Image (cartoon, rainbow, N blue to C red; front, side, top):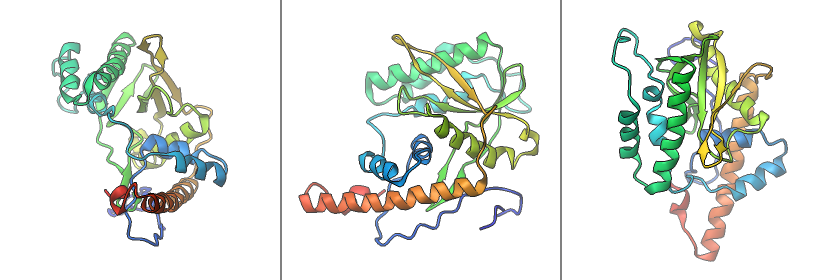
Length: 264
């Protein structure tokens, strides 16, 4: 496998060669869960974690705030940097309209959005929109351990990945190392103008009844090579296919599910 993309420029698409014995399609793992599973240091731990895992997440997501990231940061578009600043009421309404799964989703999305909005302005962050695409990992799947923005906090540019979860996020160092390494492989290695940009995981841990913000940068983190990432991702999806098959067979035998349980 060569780390060259279709256009011939240097890139690092992780290509998985997972051989599935069945024609079953397995559900994708979210970026955060993929990094968390990649951080587990034994096959037994990985198998137990995957057996307990319910793909697809809960009844709601942080997609509304994720889709509003550029507005929350007041990110400018190249050649259009004289546009009027985004106001909090307007971006709040935008997120609320996108929250279609009740009060919990609305409060959670608005909560982390307000923290990001206020932090960016308090510390004078400047942001610019940069289309970075999605990283292919095989099986017709992609990942995106970044937002399409580059932020300058006064100490230079950094490439953020926003971990909005209250828990079960990228708290563990090894999980953060996986995510930061994905950023390095896909963005810094492919964009010469961003080769020296810092990499960051942005967390929103609870602070009483509210949410706070914490940034973890790549300083001091030993980033993984493309080969290491490729091996870990391939291993996880191969094990996930096996576990999914076991789960499906168990559902069939108990009458609690059928072949469609793991279909897209």
